[in-house]
Image 1 (cartoon, rainbow, N blue to C red):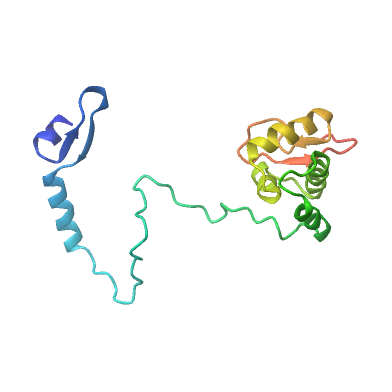
Image 2 (spheres, rainbow, N blue to C red; image 1 turned 90 degrees about the vertical axis):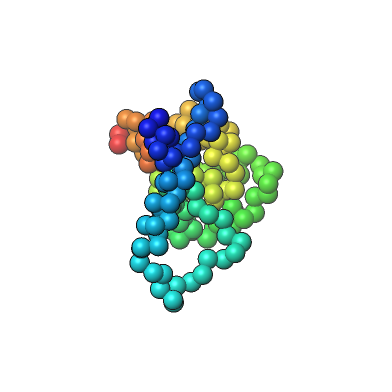
Length: 161
């Protein structure tokens, strides 16, 4: 770092433990030269809107399946129930909807949260965990509680999965 700073590739900001580095003047010159020598942008490419914000360099790509597509396989009677619950819906109505959803197929917490329009933490604390303690719901991956693809399903009467 010290050599790169001395060569003006990096510029130190801050002092002591809070020191961070930004691109120095020599590094910026090299980057500009590389950009000038790079392939030209095709004329038919769309311009970037003036009001768009730049994407941070350290951001991860958005996966194609990041938004759960859950509306497709849900029966209309359940969708009607979901539409009828208000922001202060009765807990018994929400419990019934969660159990009905999880009896269709295993649902992830984020999917249930998106459908019922409640935060995942709130759903987990207020509904999912109590339903699991009562034995009405169970994990899809029982051997690993914090599995990255963990989902909840309605517990079968004689479930040995």
